[in-house]
Amino acid sequence: MTTTTPPLRVGLIGAGGNTKLRHIPGFRATGEAELVSVCNRSAESSQRVADEFAIPRVETDPAALIAAPDLDAICIGTWPYMHRELTVAALEAGKHVLCEARMAMDASEARVMVAAAEARPELVAQLVPAPFDLKSWRTIRRLLADGSLGDIREVHVTLLNGNALDPGAPLHWRDRRDLSGMNVMQFGIMLEVVSRWLGPTRSVIAQGATFVGRRNDPVSGAATAIEVPDSLGVFAELERGGRVSYRLGTVLHGAPPEANGVSIYGSAGTLHWRLGDTMAFAPLGQEGAPLEPDVGTAGEWRVEQDFVDSIRRGAPVELTSFEDGLHYMRVTEAVFRSRSEGQGVRLSEV
Image 1 (spheres, rainbow, N blue to C red):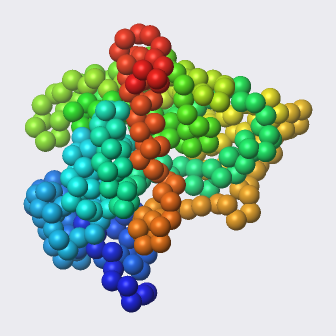
Image 2 (cartoon, rainbow, N blue to C red; image 1 turned 90 degrees about the horizontal axis):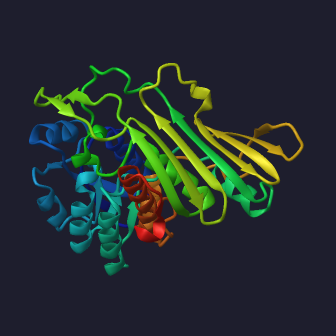
């Protein structure tokens, strides 16, 4: 360890792709954290992760891991259906929490999580942030704050691909309402990015469709009906003024990947941000040109270090707080209600 301070002792609940790719290496890279135990969906998969990453203890019951007296923090890497239960239990047990996105199944669950965090202000409660804009978000906020973009008129959000085009592909957890709740495709990730830049949403009107309506469950082999849309359109009004249109689809052959991103059209200029975290800016009346992040502002993935810094040094949680997560879950639920009821929904109603 890099200091004489005892390591932050971390337990992992859920050890899928992001946990193995990001969180385990990220915690070890801090030099201040020790991975003590892991609990995955089965004893066998838990043991595989423990063996692969030299984690000393395997638990078969999340409650036992949370109750362990030798843990300081819990990293929750499960699908959304378990986030509320595990987060509340961990906070009540006196453990800091890093919870994977999407925050919860719906806004009601998110509110319960926020209340649990507020009841234990001495503990850190953090959500894993959308990682798409880590280099650019501070620069985009600066363009908004200094008037370079002017008043926001329209924002166009596009995320189109053919990732789910094959009807023979197995059922994914994102296809299952019982696991993903009201979340749809990557809408929540793009919403989090837009909210980070432009602030809260006031109202939405949405429509969705499910073109591939059945897939085979890889566990049971049974054909399973899908309720979650694979095509979604949302018109949203921002509290600051301006309109946002979201277009998402995963069953679109030949969708141009270079179109995926966010365009902000203001009264003084236009910003085009593209997946890959690149930007181009055009002041009013001028041609667009590539824009690099402001000097010293380009971030990178440091979620686990941020979590440790908040615990050890009192750094405020910025990416992403439970309060910000509650907002994007309120918008997510508003979109669900709008497309279910066929009418606009104001955030004040959610």
